[in-house]
Image (cartoon, rainbow, N blue to C red; front, side, top):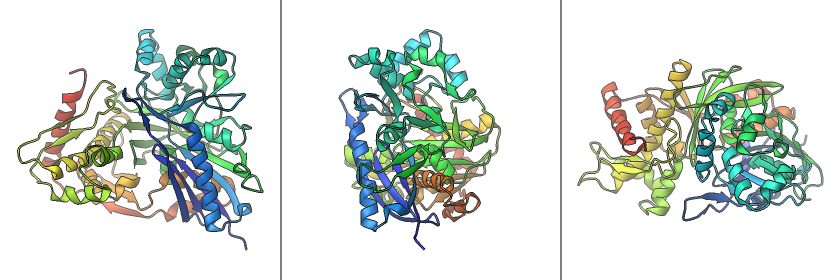
Length: 495
């Protein structure tokens, strides 16, 4: 009998990977391609949408070719994508009018301030579950419309497409036939009403965005269209799932019941708690989003997003030259002096949840004469766990739920020191997935279930995890965490 496959496409901030799953949901191969991080002297961060699309085609077709897979045996594609990153393209030519503005980029701060001064911030928060911020897609899209010549006029006539990366890939993969997004990605744009489950006219007007330029919102396990991969395939392959990468990781982690929580460690990090079928609007600095829509039903999440976690290690490596690789970081943390009290607050472009301070700047503090490279690198690793802890404490306060287990995924979770430190600083058990590709897994499993290849009650049982339990005292925990909070207070712009 012919083996059947699902392909998970994970389009992340740093690159694009295609992952091949067999009929049992096991990963058999993957192919990766990185793309440029376009950063100017103002700190603006962009990606080339065409480069991302061409990389997507390349990794998928090379994966199929190198594995000798019959394209007819590929029963579906699931897409997970970097969220909040937004682009605008012409409906006639299909070409972007500008580079995509990446979620890390805060250039639209003035637009947010303008909207806040107009008195719309509270309305936007109540309808979208999101605090008004340049982090989200709406103000970034508004910036493009306001600064790229001719865009405002074309947008007013409905001649432009405004979408996140999932919409762009679906549009391109289907030859311009499908202009769709899913509930998870829509809920992160700051244009989508999470109560009515529609693009909100009042919010769109506040940002100067024509609703006719926005994609149709679909269930996350919908049939989004079919693709022949730019003529590579002799058959049309269905695109059967689309999810924001953090939502896909939540789904892949099996966190499908209220109270289950996961943290994805990537360039930045997303902490998500499934809160079920009713939204909770938090006053503690975390936001409310849609987890997904599946089979006509939506689930909600509390979420906190952190701008710089795994990318801190990249910064230590590529910009400061302190380490040669992630492996160096794992080695140096064990060599650091246990009594050193150095902290790094990586507010390179402000702070995300739960502080939401775009004007904050980074700091090393607590340095003494005996602080050396190992101590600085350890501070870089530990700041990842501290930022995750900040968000989880805010979620506990908002939802009133006692958290006993945290499921984690992403490349940095291979760092044993980081995972043990995370367990110790939170005083909870940490269950780290042994698979790095949880976003691809979640998208692929959703697609495979929708295509009838996987059984929902069985497919998630095969995720293997490494378990960490707290080892430190409450006194140690209080001293370390209080030191972190003091360091953060040094950089907050309101202080």
